[in-house]
Every structure is written in structure tokens, then in C-alpha cells.
Length: 608
Image (cartoon, rainbow, N blue to C red; front, top):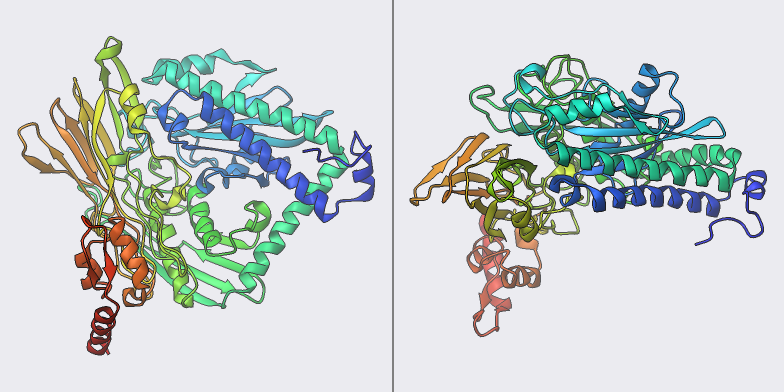
């Protein structure tokens, strides 16, 4: 597409005329296109499965004034804190210039958690700093004391053991600073894999840099400055308008993380205060009245605490609102220092800052918005970041016993339901909002020395409702030749995703080891699962909760769920009050309308 005005190669005419809505839209879409090109570069060139297959990474464009401008299909938890990272870059390197690049994974200066290596490249045009491109990618290994990037048992960063780079310069004049590369290659268990991922991220950042230079050259510096201001202001107006359409009021939402023995025997109880000022078009989310930071890796960082709250609010607004610093102006998140869902004090570990407690906050807010009435909010989604998404490690006999480390994404998890739509299968967990891909079974079996026995959606695992949640998934796998270790930090084994407005909760997750002799061992929330050849890991995550009374679900939808094996005939009758006749073998399943109406009426009379 030619997105410049006719006969205006330099963009001077647009700059002189100002930005009309069409040009604003064209330039905004060009920003998203650059983000997508960066994303595809990482996806098709990364070495590790966690990045190149599961897509656990995100790209963004940040302005020179440290405002998130464009993210395309990025995960909010990755990109909506990058303005804190670019501000740190400017503070620590006030003389940064063209050709520089920085590596940041410091949870105390704006990053999500230490496992997310962020590549930052400032973009200049004719000596003026216009943008910074960011590529944040979850590494397979970062030098932790254990072979995992999710170490919930870490009492502090010293026990966590990861290499932390507080916005360290890694390139000068477009060349690597080899000292930093050598440090990583020496400490990280899979150095060649890490270096391949580093090159993929850096390549994407440099492509973003080139495209943004061309963008400024095409439209002119003044038009680009006007665009940045206009786009962020437009985004703010859109967010304000969506909030003004909500009923005003106060909501107190609550959530619970499962107990983790021995360091959190009572789990973690949180509450979220939500103030909706519909007249002013503003929402305030208060996370301050929560427990202090814990001596474990579950503490959130400033970025992840803020952005889990903001992500959940965005989900409850108009889906077409641009997600950037402009729309974020209308969402205020209040944090306090030394809080488990706030601003951590060094040296508290934030190893698990992108999943467990963020999922707890997101689910609490999604369900909290449903208190505004039917048509608002969501039920809760899969919070079981279980063994099917654990970090596997060991030695691969096929390549001379070389070590391997990788986070699997074999589980899928069920999405929450809304007032109008059933939850989908394949969310992974709330914080990933369906943007993380489930691993390919065949590719994983080729790349790693394990065998997958089963990956499937589970019948009757959805939370029932007028709109049901997405189904849970079951995974069974194990090593083919040598021992394998799987480390994960789970949730949703006791505190399950809840339904709203009469919708029912989903079922608890499960994780156990099936030994070669057929015996079984249930293992803990914070799990180290050692698998010998012949052993199998058996993991089940959560489905999503239901939205609304199951007795009001259209019988035809229940019939379809039975045909797809999401719901059994027994649950169709017992929970939904739908009587189904016929046989799958004869392919003549049908709803007995009269019997269904009688059954539902009797249920309503009993509950009245």
C-alpha cells in the first residue's frame, strides 16, 4: 500500500496540512505493521522453543518521551512496562546515541522479571531521538541456581541466582560488546541457544529501527511529532468514552493463590479496590491493601502489578481501544512499596512475577466487573500454570549428552466466559490473553528427548453457565531415554476459576507422576518432578468459569457441546437441564424439547 499523499515523496504536504483522521489511521497502522514485522523476525529466527514455537515474547515502539506508542499483538504484561525501561535507559546512559543497544532484565528498574531479556534500541533521525524499539523475550535459561526461569522457592535474588542486567549496554556503533556476550555464554546452561535468541531479538530491533527511520523520512519530522501527540490523545479519548459508558461505582474484588508448602502454607489472599468514575471517564485500581512482599519468588514487579490490573480493565472495555500510554492515562493503578502485588524491595525475588499473582489479580478484576450487572465483566479463566507448562531439563543422548532446558507450553487452559460468548480453548493463562501458542507435539518430540502420550481437551471441565468457560486440557508425557526434571509453580489446584452471575466454577487442576510400575504420586504446588525412563508426568489445568445461569443456556448450544465432547450427556441433564436423545454411534443426537422444558421448570420451582 502507498500510504503517502500523491506527488509528495517527502511527506512535506502532509506536515504542512496537519493530520486528518485518515492520515492518522494510516500512520498508526504503519506503527503496528512495524511491530508485526519485528514479531515475525523473532518468531522465524529464534533458537529456543519457548520463543520460536510458543511465542513467549513481545515487541513494542516507545516514544522518546517514554510513552508506549504501538504494540500490535503483544502481551500486555511484556510491553506496558517498557516505558519504565526506556526511562531507566536514559537515566543510566544519558549519552546514548545511534548504534547503541541495551540489555535489561532488572525487575527493580522496570522489567517484568529476570527471565525476560529486553533488547532496547534507540532510534534517531538526523540526530534527533524519536523512538526506542523494545523486544522482550522469555529465555529458556538465564543462569538460575536451578534449571528453570520460574523459581518460586527462591527466598531472594541471591537464591534465585539469575544473571541480572540493569539496562546494560550490549552494542556500541552496531557492534556487540563481547564482555557481556561472554558473561552470558559462560553462565547460561544452553549458551548457543541463548545466543541464537539474542541475535533474533537484536535483528528484530534493528529491523524496527530501519523501518522507523524510513517512517520519519517519509512523513517528515514535524508530521511524526504531530502524529505521536494526536494518536496518544485519540487513544485517551477512546478510553475515556468507554469508561463513561460504564455504570459508576465501587467494587471490591478478591482472589486467592493456592498454598505453597512450606513457605506459603496459607496461600496468598489479595483484594483489589476498583473505583469507576464514569462522569470523568477514569478508573482507579487500588492494590495497596495487600500483604507485604513474601520470601518467595511470587512477588510482582512495578510493571507486572500495574499492567496486570490495567490489562484486566482493558479486557472489560471496548476491544477496539488502542492499547498504549494514551489510553493508560485513564487507568490509575495505586501500588505501595514492599507489597506482594506492588513495588518490591531489593533483594526480594520476583522470579514468577509474570504468571501466578498476575493471574490472580486479572481473574479477580474480570469477575469484579461482572458485579456491575449482566453484560459486564467476565468469569475467571485458567490459573493453573501447571506441569504442562513446566520447565523441562536434562541431557540429550542424541547429541552426545548435551544439556537442554526449555519451558514447555503443552497445556492450553480454558478462557473465561463473557455475557455473549463461550470461553475458548487455548488461553494458556489469563496474563497471556491467548497470545502464547501451544507447542507442537511433533516439533517438541523432535527437538527434545521426551515423548508425549496425550494432549487433549477434557470433557465436563468447563464452568457451566448461560455461556460456558473454555475446557481444561490434559497432558501426559515423559522421557524416552535419560532422566528428566520438570520444575513448575502451580495454582488452581485448590482455588479454581469462579463463575459469575449464577455461572459455576471450573474444576481443580491436577499434577501427578505415574511411575514405570503404574503407581502414582501426587506432587506439590511448587514442584520438582524427577522422571526416570518409563515414568510419566500427568498434568491437568483449569477450564474457565461460567457466566450466567446454566438453565438459561440454549438447548441447541448444549447439544453442540455434547457432540463436541465438551459436555457429557450426564452433565447436560444434571447441570443444564437438557435432555438429549439418540446415540453418537447412529449420529442422531437430538434435544427432547418437551422433556427439557419440564425438567428446567421443575428446577426453577425447586430453587424459587
